[in-house]
Length: 255
Image 1 (cartoon, rainbow, N blue to C red):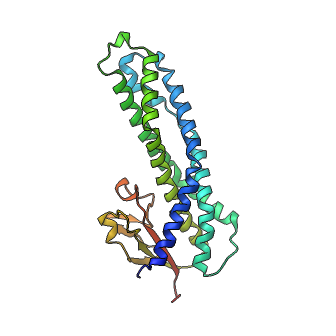
Image 2: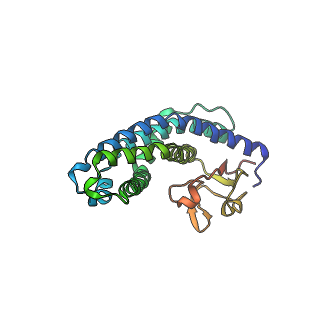
């Protein structure tokens, strides 16, 4: 199936809308991370300096991510689900919010843990590197917890903008994909799905997927990976991060 310029433009509008909504959750994540970072750094006195890089990252607990993640996915997902159903049905449907929300919450309940673990793992890796950098070439006995605190916090201020932005962009667009898929699947209507590219900085492996059409329960094979749709949770970072592709769904039988 050929993707029309109008469809491509419409999907771009949806992506921008998802990103605008997702951005409203950035301050909340930044504040929670800042508090957690301060909490862990203040525990450094409990460990020898030589153990800081190994032991302190283990103390990071981003328990706030579970609620934050759910709120972002619901915030981005509900309007996306409503619009997807309207377009799929070819008319203004009256979607049942509870049905879309239930489908999204079920996905979050069963799948979000994997994403949260990856997000926290990346944060811990950064923190470990920041601690190592802070104590590098320092006389261990002279290097204080306050010095560690100041060094790491200053580093966080420098990098937090791109860290938070990367998470927001990735998860907002992932939420868009999930909401679109889950809302249509909830209708119980068989359909075909066609992969489309944004046309902007598209990676070669995704470019060859342009126009590929398969049935609803089939997988797109993208650079050797099996994905139900762009930014599917089963994809690697190489296939998911900064992906701006989309899927056009059409009920089977519609001309």
